[in-house]
Image (cartoon, rainbow, N blue to C red; front, side, top):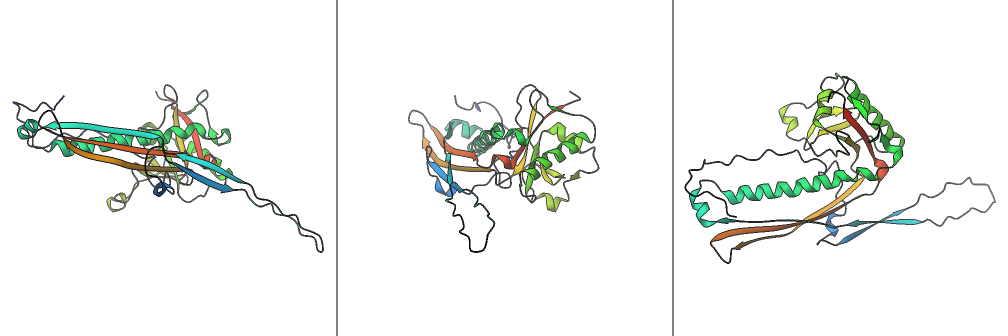
Length: 284
């Protein structure tokens, strides 16, 4: 169905749709170490790792034991394929004062990124039980002014115990959680406008050693059980490519068309470098 602009005077600017802040797919939350090695959907990236050498005690004049190191391999599969395709009729373009094609392309790009954002966040299910705070059956009720901050401290402890680097840690929280953080004097909100310009998407401040980001893509397990992911970018490897973008003229009609294909995949290569807290809003 073409855009119906006929017999209508349209404003010079389109009203852009409200957008969620897309957080999980950006540098600082994930790494893209293997992105240069993919080309098309179905490609795989083999990620090798090697075990730690055993440290022995040396005894003078005694033989030493030589260890044969074992290796392990993980596969990052580029198995997600999403597309967009649309046309704008020539008559519609004449009737309006805005560039509908540009706006549609912007909306399509956002839609692709939004799905990828949710795809990455869904890997919270792979985090080992030792890195969990609360559960879907027994979530942590966040309601008091200091409960949100204390929950971040507990997540930080989980990462400390897993030897995750302290520098570069992030946590992504839902809006209600941010509201409780604002009631806590220990939460350091975003700074001056000049500093804000260099922020990560969704960044709202610093707390408990984390760069705190807010998103409406925080996974919800059931009802109001939110899965707050905290961690380091070494945990998750993500790779993507816009493999096809083509413009064309509609064969039967007078319209411009555009279609695009986005391929991507991700792997939680270090599950212990994520910690997940299950929280619920005590006020709801």
